[in-house]
Length: 238
Image 1 (cartoon, rainbow, N blue to C red):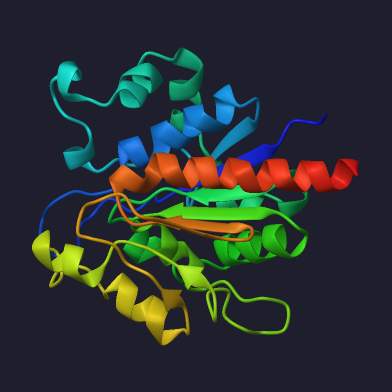
Image 2 (image 1 turned 180 degrees about the vertical axis):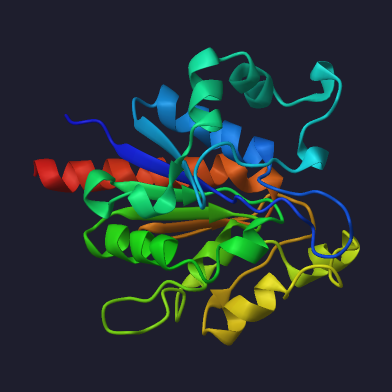
């Protein structure tokens, strides 16, 4: 049976608004699904909005290796993985025909460069409409905001969706820094938003769309995406 082909698309935005602080993608939200996919036999391609080496959120990479999640340590020790991260493919060069799924890790950077990126919006909608799987976690669902289906409807409309909640943003002290509140925007586009308790694992899966709330939810999103991909393979084999 053919391997699943999964694109992971990272933010390329490194400035946390006007705060003077740095941001970018969240390490564990990238690395944990990366190895869940890879260890399941999938082919994984790392892309980003601008291509090249994307910035990471400093708060997601502890200085002490002992404090880093196992998947982060594994990734940082993986020469092939680090080379791929340093040379991510620009999202405009990722073609939907080449992938069975697309996954968007979070990190506050997503809030700036993902919502209005036409290439990302097109990749998401085309992968989904050709029968593929779409997943996102934490601030990654910001990348779903600009996606439209072929009938013009927002991708998230009437769909069960989860993300970093407005309550979590306020508790994190970033609600006045981000350009908008993600939960509010998703609800405004008609998403059936389902949030869990702050900073606790919460994953929503509806068919071929899987979303999670925070870093603790990244593994669950990966599992949900793999379940959806395996279901598609079974259907194709029948």
